[in-house]
Image (cartoon, rainbow, N blue to C red; front, side):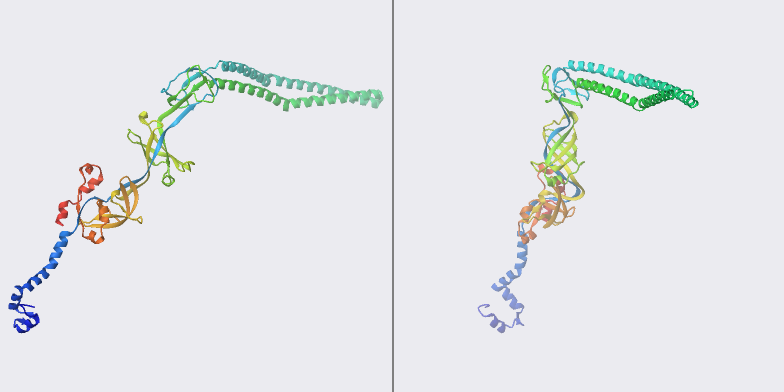
Length: 469
């Protein structure tokens, strides 16, 4: 109704209506009435809604860091115990009273240095006795090789010569008597007697020749072997006595320092217990037990760092990766060897080792605080766009090093990721997130000088920039 009359009826009677729309005078009358107010409000509604939506868009204050292309290392860390690289626990080979000590606990010694002297008078007497037996055997050997055997051979040669002469004489006699017997000048008995004598001379000649040949081929070698055997036995006893005497002198096998000396002079040193312990502290070994999964990435030669309480980090390298598991802990024993200048690291100290298992020189790296983990195991980040609009992106991670993580897929170097406030943004409805704008906040003063994250934040837009948007 308009002015108390139905609009249709008014439209037919009022000549100001043209083709169903009011004429200019009619519009002036309408705008001044209640209907004009309603129409004006309907026309202004879209503009007001847009302005109100812009005014009600949520603003979230966050901190961001830029993804950097840099190197990152995969490190394996574990607790370890320090051991000396070289250690000598000296146990005497003989049991005897300690005559004298030449070192005390803490003394620095060199390889071959005399550390202690055991009672050895009986051993010295044994050496003297065996030295005499050895000299005697040496003299007998000289006699056998230079005098006895040649004389026997010479005598056998003379016997052979004499037997040859007797044989020749008897052969002539026998031949002559054969001639005389044929002529009838002698009896048969004389010929037979001559033959017997000839045969005996022939046998003697054969025995003499055989004896000489035996001396030349066997007797000399056997005589020398007997003499050599006696000499070797005497020499062995003499060297054994010398070794026993040498065992009474306790010497250091390595350079190092004396860490233990349980006995005092006059006490009995036993061949079953240590007398002196010497360790070399110029190099140490940190022995760590690492899980199978982490140890699979380690190799001999990997660089490492040993951290001890109250001391600066000491660089080292992996020297042993055990090929077998420890049966009690099912872990792999790994040795990290390092130099020990000034002997700062003490054996038995509990330390922490950090081993570089892998290095990626050109990686996209972000702070690990920017990662968001979904219930299904997926990972994502909130990226701050150029207009400070947030966007959630799925990413794949690689190596982690401290507070940094490598992104292998889903992010480019230079993109800004939200490090503080990302969890709240990820929990928002996607429509709300699309309307959200970010207010970039600089890190707290305590963090500004802490590393590259503060450097990234310094390049981020300030809150004023977001207000302009």
